[in-house]
Length: 309
Image (cartoon, rainbow, N blue to C red; front, side, top):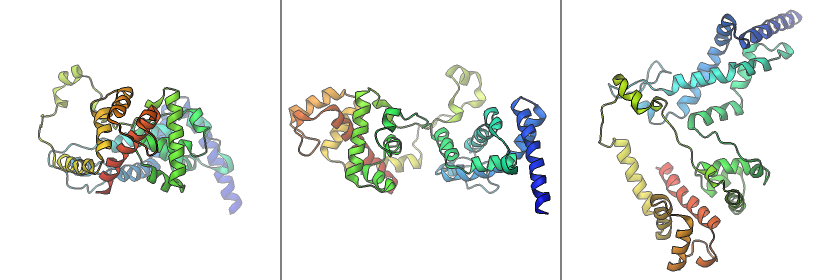
């Protein structure tokens, strides 16, 4: 019986090889069958990934992934991320290049191939890159600095503090701080410091232009100028987090983030005010790299405080 099963699996894998080739070549019937093979795997992973990062969306929109959604407002619209995630996963798993890489080794069926990819860490990271708009290439010269450079780069870009990064990587804070400074120094020298700017989440239903939105009144929303309860709560939390910053930290954030002053002007102001941002380093000896690092550390503090609430 075992031999018969091996023969059946081998025969099926050969059939799936031909199916994958036809689908990659654009055969509509083969494409429909491939999509059907991937459907259950994609449905499961879409529900799993999307709900993991749902957060407040379940209280504002109607979820398309569950039969018993939470209690959003009566006039709530359907959440966009469930269907969008399904579409992204379908494309990632069944695009032409992916199908042509399938070899059917050891009797592996096409759905086994999809299952293996969909349950891998790279697939999960690619989905998060797409979901949160964080897909950015880590320069080779950064990756070559040290083994953890890529992970630290992404952590800095996400606004994580040194203690959090150290905890995740199981390293001493002093080591992580030195590595962070090295990354910032190299990016500053290469004039690529903007690569550490945090990603932004963009709504999928806001991609139309002003003229398109005017032409289609059905897509227009009724303006509401009152802050939502969640927004009011976030503002209160941010105010409390702001009060925890030192006067120097508040000044740096006000000057460099709110007023968008140039680093050279801020350094000059620190010299005139005789304010040091690093222990043991005089204001006159403070450089742009140290200033940018101080700003990034300071920005991480309110973000960390907000998560603690």
